[in-house]
Image (cartoon, one colour):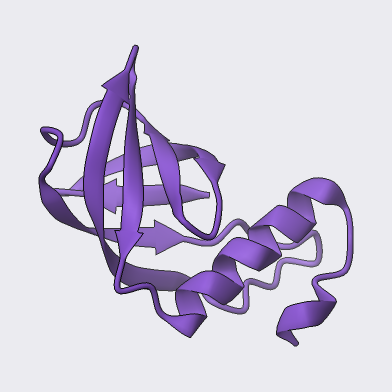
Length: 97
């Protein structure tokens, strides 16, 4: 997955239902940012939720990464996160069909 913040694309290094960690420094801690999250593509080329626009609170920086907590998370965002985790684990995301 990748996320666009301020016109710059950042790889998503870790993601959960609560937030994500992006490679790179995107903003100062305590800043609320808007980002576009791009889904990873399935092996068959399908990506059910191509992009999601969301907001997050920058929590902290660690080395060359930024931790962000999702703000006002939506069901489409949560479904995208679950599907991404399922892809990484190689399991069927049965809870979000």
